[in-house]
Amino acid sequence: MADMLDGDAAHLTPAWTRIREMTRSEIGSAAFESWINPLTLIDARDGAAVLTAPTNFIGDWVERHYGDVLVRNIAAEFDGVTRLKFVVRPARRPAARPAAPETPRAQPEAAPRMAETRAEPAPRPQAQRRAEPDETAQEDLPSSPLDPRFTFDRFVVGKPNELAHAAARRVAEAPEVTFNPLFLYGGVGLGKTHLMHAIAWKLTEDGSERRVLYLSAEQFMYRFVQALRFKDTISFKQLFRSVDVLMVDDVQFIAGKDSTQEEFFHTFNALVDQGKQIVISADRAPGEIDGLEERIKSRLQWGLVVDLHPTDYELRLGILQSKLESMRAAHPDVEIHPKVLEFLAHRISSNVRVLEGALTRLLAFASLVGRPVDLDMTQECLADILRANDKKVTVEEIQRKVAAHYNLRMSDLLSPRRARAIARPRQIAMYLAKTLTSKSLPEIGRRFGGRDHTTVIHAVKTIEKLKDTDSAIAEDIELLRRMLEA
Image (cartoon, helix red, strand yellow):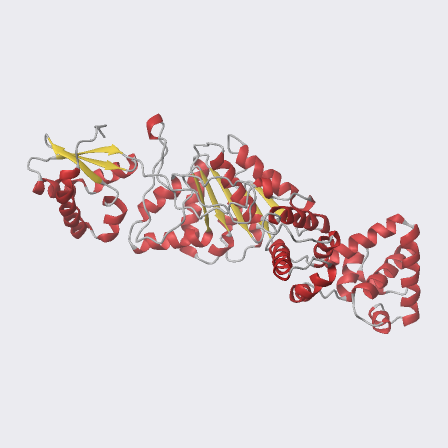
């Protein structure tokens, strides 16, 4: 394509409008919106019609597939036109997404290639990477919007998520592909999406030329269905194969959807073959996602598979402290008792979103009524959340955890054997059953092989004394309690 300077294109506008309408009627609205709409006629003389295109790729595609139609329609307005020439005119970059109101510090500016996904008649074609220095600006990728709060700086690291955080930072900061794919999985509210957004922010903040496409598996499927509907799968393939980093959240959504899995499989292979980075998240490990093809499971396990474990007390407390610090600007006059955060970290263990939501509600309530946040107010304001998070620990669950911790069989705990290696874990299990469940002493005794309630009383008193004198037993009990309440 020739590189030509702009002429005075204003007088061409009425003719170009008529040419566009003729072309739309011939090729259809879907193809027109995808390929012809981005073009502008800027000159028509010496047998050549000069048009601007957002990217080289679009110009090449139009010339190959719709060149004859355009030349014919332009010649109807301008005699002697027999060929097309294109000038690359990159699309204007979007404005940055505003920072979250509650965030006190400056947030990272929205990246040029991170625009909100909009429903369109058909997927828009995307640019391939270009080496020319004057063509580094690229058409916006249809990525999901990034949350400005979800950065590495605001991700609280603890033992349950330490490995996942380190792997995510390596992918975001390494100049070359390291783990491919990086597969992050874990339950709801454990930080998968936060790390995905943080990787995308880091890649776009640091001036990297890598083209990043972040979206959910549901959006991947939607765009694929749209491409099938409008018979425009070529542009879909070009889009997903032209990126440098593909990030797909909640990949379990495509399980059982055969056509989408087929396209995802080929996209995955194409990007890996090109040495492009892939980052995937799900709520389960690849091998545990029912309805996912075995060949996809196998490829998802090629790289690094990292589990985000349920949060422990220390991590939950750290998250609350970080959240409180970020919310101080919005609630500068609210006084909060230091024991409140410890109480919340202990009582709300389901997931981080519920934990942060509880703190948000608590501070908003305190600000509205003008009261300091203490334990009484916390229990009053969060009664429904606290009830929902009161996990019902069962005697059977306690027995299983204790048996596994001490490498015993369940039958050993229930047997009449009195060897210390069995009797002491049995007493610990009885103690935990008394303190963590609402079962009566006779009921607990019956669950332990039909023992009398006096045996349970003796076990509870024995363990209470040993906790104060034997640090190993105290540590075992605390560890078991946390495992059961997690």
